[in-house]
Image (cartoon, rainbow, N blue to C red; front, top):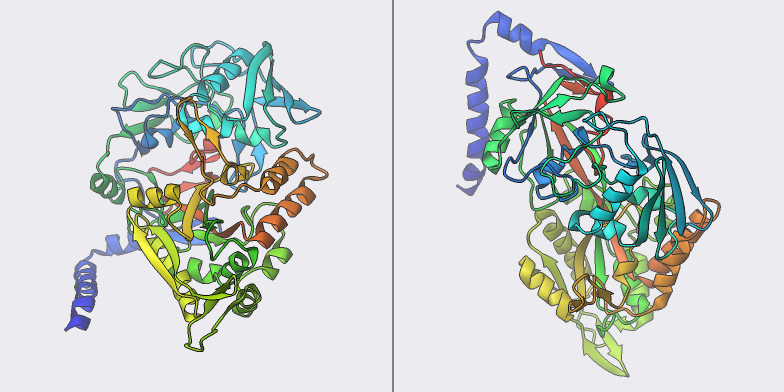
Length: 535
């Protein structure tokens, strides 16, 4: 009976498909057979239902890209505003705004810009506008973390602005993927921009700006804004081709479950899953135990089984696509149960009473092991990954109790230190700086609010902070070596155990859009290179 319950929806779906296939005209069957090429793939042609290009829009939240009130509207901000620098899908950095960059110590930077670029009112872009955009963005949560190292930013002339940092960072340009708005307009609901489109008078469409430098190659004259704030309505609108492009996060709590008859492109992200430890735990105060857990994590198996092709396994705290990633070293420290058992044994974790379960020897006393492992339940993928890790350790004889907690309870456990090991996720900035995981205290803008930041490990060893500082301050010639030293320190001390980097999905209808070069920070990157077929 249980088997029938599981199979019945599949049988009904197959029957419905069979009925829909019957009675089709010859013309309909011929249309279904038409195909187009997308890259090297042959795909079925499906045109937009309404012959216009439409994106989702939240009219209640405005389109000011600095104030960033709506995640929905922030997806299309680059259609209206240029970014100072662009972080591409492979995490390289480009710019059509900055023409020259100068720095000798990576703490004082000077940037020269192209002042021939114009705002939508015809006025020329100046360094004053860019400095203003950076200085205002620092005060909004969407940008605050990536700009926190900036001590000051000011225009040095019409075509030149300078930035001074609190500490050297050789990868500052990667942090400046900030939209440019007109000086003095941060409180405007629609600040002037220099991007390819302007908000139309009706408020529900974007109209191409004729003064845009790539105006002649824009794929459409008008981008229509459609209000589908309800999740079910958004899915239905996309499936009916009333929306032409959407994103999805299969590994997160917002996996919307779109149909499979679409074109799917994958966006590499800096969102890293990892295991963190309480360094004050009686089980993990020693690096051998932490490294043993790292050797017991089957990263590839987790990605294959639970991440729906939307993650990339990693051993090091940097995306494997980065030139900083040492694949040879990573392979040596990847999943290896035999090495995990040796590390546990070297730490003194053995079956002392021959009961099939391992114990730990603490000050000469045999102590039963029961590791308190916590995970947040909001993401099914993370939950299943944590279960798999716990199961592996239990099978090795290491007793692990997995506590599956709601978000509020999970955060409370982290902040109170009521855990031994946790499954975490962090959205890294494009310079791959994780020093905040090891800094003892962070003072936020509210002077009365002093917290531990994200140092949930209760780790107060300056070696990690110093290693990150050395890496961020290293020039191009020494950067890989500095990061290699950092990665080895993190890996061989088991400070954290990286698991994977998430990939997001960009969904479009088959055969409608080509030439897409979307990124984590901008799904409409290089929109002027897209081809959109609406017929």
